[in-house]
Length: 181
Image (cartoon, rainbow, N blue to C red):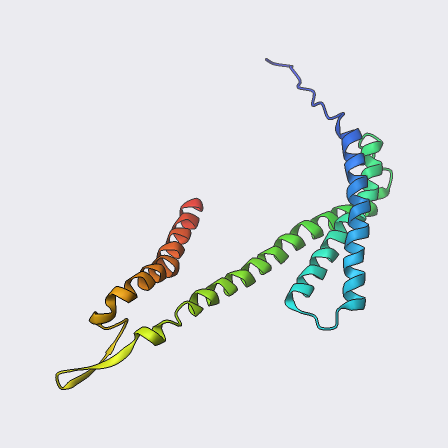
């Protein structure tokens, strides 16, 4: 209908967001501050886990730093009396946390993926038990997987290897490709 205006009801955010953001601010400041302080004062050797944890805590502190002004703004019914520079800083801190956290978690995921990849490679160690040479007539052959007499013992291992090393990665790749088309 022409001229009809839909008035958006957002009154809840002027109560709910200041309360929630106050809680997040207090917990975030204390806990992330503690992580950074303990890491700087107590860690003797910086492992990959420690570096990731500190980076995530720093990214979270950027977000925490944006909250006091957001709390005040929502409590004042979306008014922003803090000026343009404060607005830019709050949005910068917010997006630094958002994208910094995403990129950091992506790095952690890649790192874990590499660990999983090497765990699959480790499952290839039984190859040393199954692969061997044998003489057939006047020729020496190198069995790729196992000799025919040992096939019954080899079959469960080969099936597990095929599922975890080929079928599962293939299905995951296929699902990812289908999801992006």
